[in-house]
Length: 390
Image (cartoon, rainbow, N blue to C red):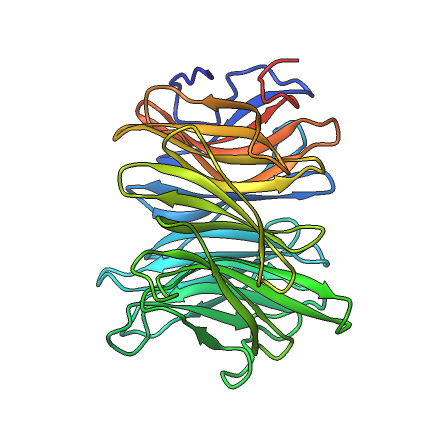
């Protein structure tokens, strides 16, 4: 178990840094929460939020080297609280950040930031209807320089509750394409929500396709399933399917496999939670593997494919005020856990998105840790066995 101790309200580096393992804490005034991360040629870009009485909730971006040492820090925000969700990197080196802008009347919009490679803001976009709420979940940069923005909207006719909204921009800008082409709402049930979008090159059609993962209560059932659908270059839906168990299955992360896709998330029956991995074919019409965890009360957050196995990260629920960061290596073909470990103290420690395999085989991930009176972002690297030692 990783011992997290309290310190002053500044950047905290209480552990010595090694190449094979380290723990680094980040934060200034107020509380910070981790959301997502990407890798660049010389380190990591960390995305989170910073919340203080003076400034409210703002977007926090930190660049570090590969040992977790801070290179630069940027904060962006305005008069309304902003909750960042995802960060993507373009071929040009720019970063695209999606966040939810929350208003005093309890409505919200999707906000997108475009940043240069040094973290300076070059453009921004706010999307939403003043009478409804939109929630950001993902934003990615495409090979051709466009951006796809993914979210959930309540702008649907009654009795529907919510649907998935997919937006696309013009090349190298945040100017949205017309509503007749890509500014579309997709819904299969009466309460659908978005999770993640990926770009995939299809050899047969010699073109790019876009796959969206979400959660839906369609499929003629009262429970929730993972929803996956594909879009062509014009934004038209190609394939759609639902995969899940007899319980409620909540989408978390989508990865492209050698053949097909991996759908990762959480299955819950109301009394307990556990991570759920489902492998589906390229056409989305067949499921070849399903893996659920045996350890109780794990909420699945992110997954990576390391060849012969998967590394997964999630949050272990111990009690109402006690959660830990959960990390495991599982076999690809059989539901075998090679190893599993948890990190945390006796308070709320939660996994974020962003999970990477370093060149030396070490595993790097981002998390939120509760240091008694402080909540901070933590960048953690463990060895190939998931341990904080050599």
